[in-house]
Length: 255
DNA sequence: ATGGTAGACAATCTA
Image (tube, rainbow, N blue to C red; front, side, top):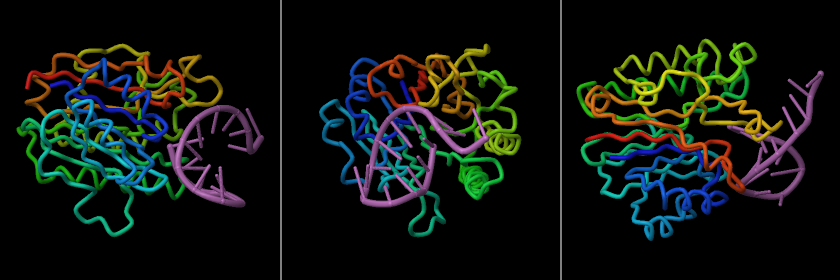
């Protein structure tokens, strides 16, 4: 099973780039974030032609997540169980080939200490509690745009980023709390060095300078960690015309 | 020092 996660920053703007990548990468499962469109605008037919089923949790203008899969997705869950009407579309989960796949778009948080920062920390607490119903012996995979770089080696300039949004102490602690459920970072099962990033700001030539952060992740419970053959970040789509500011993260499992 | 760029959607908001 080959699974990928990608924040596409508008699926309608990014459709050419995403279909081009899918045609050669051929993931079995593709988790998308930041669709920026409602369910009825999602290009499900185009993905159907490429052989994918789409489970979509859209939202007008902001957010929106989807799980595309070659095989059937069952028990699809949209949002947190206690979400009220008008809650952000940031979470979708489905069972595919026996794996509980959870696709999360963690809030950006804007700036440390802001209302959006507190919303981010609250949302991450909710995500932590979301796994209360699962045991770490089950095959569970949590992926998406976590909007947090876990460690210094995931940041191009840790000194500059220390205490900033995406790399502040409380965000990293909240991430550790979620991980404490029993997750392992699939990417770090195989690669230990620095210089691997999944996001580069559109501004100030960040990609050209390789001024990136590793904020998109695939986390897995023990049964999946033991069957994880490879995990990498494919930075090629970030070099294409009209790219997303994020690039796909991939994991391959014998499962 | 509060920019810089991209997207949605029509004056700002979010990232």
